[in-house]
Image 1: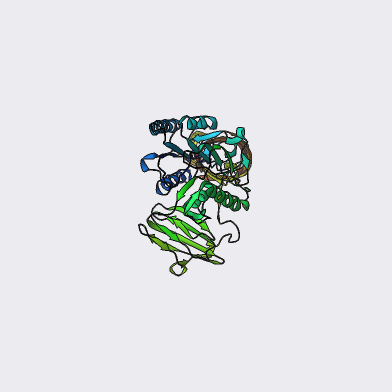
Image 2: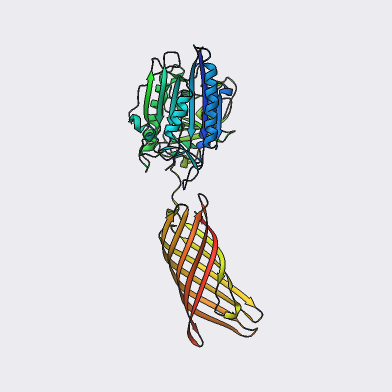
Length: 511
């Protein structure tokens, strides 16, 4: 499943209050360890979070550090840099520091995966605590991310009424994960991102402002992201995804994560809207989506692709938002979308939920190899051979192949053609796949001994076969294979048995 982790160390906070410093470290890593395929949207999600913090969270641009595809050492160095920034802020005894740390990437349930390395959750928490920031909010959007709260007994399912403020009256840490410790965190190809992160960011842009006061609090944002994530994942084969939480906070009041009172731009939606999806045209990213009842969405100036849905109607078009403008979206200015866009109108709006791509053993595989084979005409030496094979599944199962072998010398030439069907068993050792089995099929050999002497022989060939492949990525593997084939050939002199081993090296592609 998609293992994707997002950690926010506190608050995208609302209106900057006197005596409050906000800092943020936002990290995205598409690559994980071992056989996990790269994520599609982790680094993009990190970029979206960083932009929102500067746009609506009132975190100064110089106080947002964005790392994408960096190793743990770089992450730890960035936290040390923020620690020095906290120390400087605390030179004023009345200054409070709110720290936000966001990580998007793979997780094995024990820590954050950054490429081939892992940053364990206890180490992460120690680094965050070591910054001495007064308030920290940790949000983990990952497969099994609820395990990060195991020692604290995180609470599954029900939304919470957590209230905190970034004033002098609050201190401590809050931890939110997008999934329980035994659940997968899902991506959506329609929204081009993690379900939980997508709905969290949509909420912070205005979809979660249920009070209509132009301010989105932590409580509002979490409730909105929780409800949308559970609803959208409930009808998927993987089952529902349940955000969880834990916190150790003292104080009172509410933490305002974003303020929408004076946005740089705004999209205003029709009252009869059921759902809208908004994309940033310049970045080719889904910016947010809103459900029924959402009046407006805060956006930066720019051009947006807008899709509106209601009942059996779907329309879309491009809308330009000017600096400081509130742009009303009207049905009559949009164009009807294809009927294929009307997906799950009564259910979740996610067209496709993506766990990590299907395992190799469940995929169709086409392989092409080249090598050498033993001829029937011994003086020729070795023949050049080629093999094209189709496997309905890379794992245990059947295979179908075509072979061709050719060689020539001054005294003659030989051409062999074969079609085979086979059965094999597979042993998986990390990224290496070992297989053993057998193939059988008809064979036809043509030999030319002179310009006037050409002979053809039909036969049947049975071949014990072994192979090894090394996965190089999501769709490609390199392999070597060999067989010890025994053929029976029907010639003008009678039935002839011949031992014809061969071997190839090549590439396999799944599709």
